[in-house]
Image (cartoon, rainbow, N blue to C red):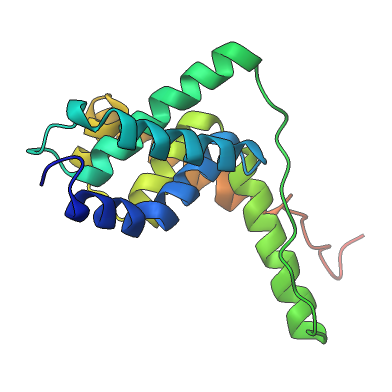
Length: 173
C-alpha cells in the first residue's frame, strides 16, 4: 500500500475513531485531542513517504501521534486534566442517573491516570493491541507494558470503588 494511494487514505479514514480515542487518552480528554488528531492526520498525509509499508498502519499512526503529543507538550507545557460529561438528553430515571454516575467515575478514573498508563490502557484494553504491539508503538519493553497496565487497572478499580468504609459491628459496644 503506497502512502498516497486511495487504499492508504481509506485505511487512514477507517482508523479515525481509534486515533481520536488515543488522542483523548494522551491529552486527558481535553480539547487538545482534536488538534492532536488533526495534526497527526495532516502529518501522515504530507509525510507519508516515511511510512514503511511493512509496518501496520495503526501502529505507525499511534507512534506518530505519540511523538506529536510529546512535541505539543514541550511547546505548550502540561495541560490541565478535565473530563466531559456525556450528553444524556431525553433520559431520566434511577438507572440513567446511576449509569451516568458510573460512567463519570470511570472517566474520571481514566483521566486521573498518569499519561503513560492512559496510553497503555487505550492501546491494550480499548484497541485490543497485543502487549508486543503496544510495546512497539510506545517503544518500551513488554514488561513495562504489563506493569503499566496492571497499575492502571488497579488505579481505576480503586478510584471507582472509592474509599472502603468498614461496616459497624452489631452487638458490640
